[in-house]
Image (tube, rainbow, N blue to C red):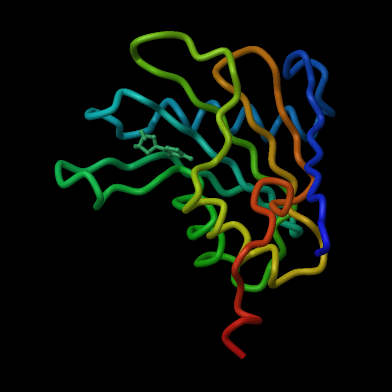
Length: 161
Ligand code: THU
């Protein structure tokens, strides 16, 4: 029997002030996007900002629906918009900020499983890893260098060859 240890790396910053200028700008775009989330049912607002290799920033926020499963998370709204508007351009970084209308969220939230899978598809189509920055509305910021840190053993198109 063989055992394999899968490790996962995360950088932890005390606050967004500690980020590089570029990362901080991207996080600010996510914070602004978050405010325009349509989340009347959960009251949980999520903003995402995607930095592309051509320098463009594409934003997304969660879009809920009275028929709950018809809504979509901020991360997928953002990466799908990036894919639609700038096909074939690599994704460098995705910044995510969350908050609730009921309380101030001061801990980062990682993307849900469906969003990790969607982001993994983009990463598998390019050579560089996609950096993920995660923050509440304030407080610590987590940074991972690749979606594989958040979704090890991801399913991908190679299985379908
Ligand atoms: N949500 C996101 O936008 N991203 C995530 O990664 C987790 C959850 C949204 C979906 C729904 O509108 C609300 O947060 C509560 O689940």
